[in-house]
Amino acid sequence: MMSAVNPVHAAVPPSQVFTRRATLSAAGYLFLSVFLIIIFEGAIRKWVSSATTLPLILMRDLLALGLVVYAWKNGHLRRYKKISVIMLAWSCLVMGWGLFQLVIGQSTPVVFIIGLRFWLLYTWFAVAAAASMNEADYRAAIRTAAGVMVLLAPLAIVQHFSPPGARINTQLDGDEESVFVAVVGVVRTTGTFSFTAGYATFLTMIAPIVFGVLGARKRNNLQFVFAVAVFISFVMGSLVSGSRTAAIASSMMLVAYLVGRLLFSKMRNKPAAFVAVVVALALTALFAFVFREAIEVTQTRFEQASAAENFGERVMTVLFGEPWVYDIMSWIGYGVGYGSNLATYVRTGSADVFALAEAEGGRILMEGGLLGFAYLALKMVVIGVGAFWSLRVSIKTNSPYAALLWLTTALAVVSWPALGNLTANGLLGIMLAFALLVFRHPRLEIFPPRASRT
Image (cartoon, rainbow, N blue to C red; front, top):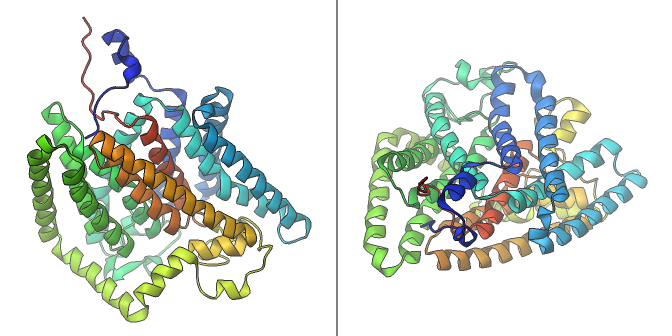
């Protein structure tokens, strides 16, 4: 359970504690602005104007950069001094390698700048957010993310039960033929995102937040209702997604939460934890029955996919890239940023496919060459260190929240198309920020007690 108060508040008058908790910092506002743009920019492009693509991307990138500058100017990065030093060294390496690619004619200035954006910006954004956001910012970010899940679930349900040609499923400049379907007549839901991968990625990112809210200490009925609504929305939103990725990730996170709730809780709290697990299973079973047709659609997708590809080979491709990549890649690479959908859009005016490879691992190696191998190694180190420390935090706080955050982060780091897809790149920055914030505020209360004003 996420509980207790930061000990630095112990000597502060209650009224001051309440005021400090209720006030968002500039870092909090910047973080929430970037997060909300990522969530709703697809809806604006899809249903308002496709011409807003580049302005929205530029806006959120400038806000993300603004948070990095804010954290640097105010000395917040010193809170993560070791991480900041490693990031600085890594940034110099990426910039140096990218400039080398540029000098020998392997890249172009535009692709190089796009590469710096994809390879560095949102990782710096995550570190800056974690270093500068206070408890009120972190709490607001968790509640906002949970609230977005409540808003997106009804939209996904309507999309699922609407025909592919319905206005809610098509883009302004698209038609029924361009809509992705799970099976004939049933769409793969996109929510507010412009593409199916965005919604599936969001469901993976939001999972630990959902279970953090569900497992948090509630102090009134409204908080209890909100937590249950968030959980139900997550279950329904996952069931109607039509995405294999969302189905696997959501199921895995649910099992991990249920096991973790029993495993990490104190002995005296295990009966209550057991009851909570039973209730969660009952709610899941209930909505699985209500949306059994959606489950059948997802099962059909799994059957079709298993007939067309080997699951083990698919997993290896996601982790390490397509096998053919190793035969055609060069040691220098094609240029950092070249394989992104933004670079493809700038070069061709269309971003329907990734230029180099579909899998993240393959794209990293194709773009960076030897630098790509260093990037894959760095990812494994980050996952290992983060998982180790998150497990220690979960044991110390008697809550599975930290471990769940880093389990999801590990999945995101190795599998999301973060160097290719604009939405996945931004959401990975958000995910990393949450994962680092759990080390700064391990005992944060999502629903804190109201301090007395007397």
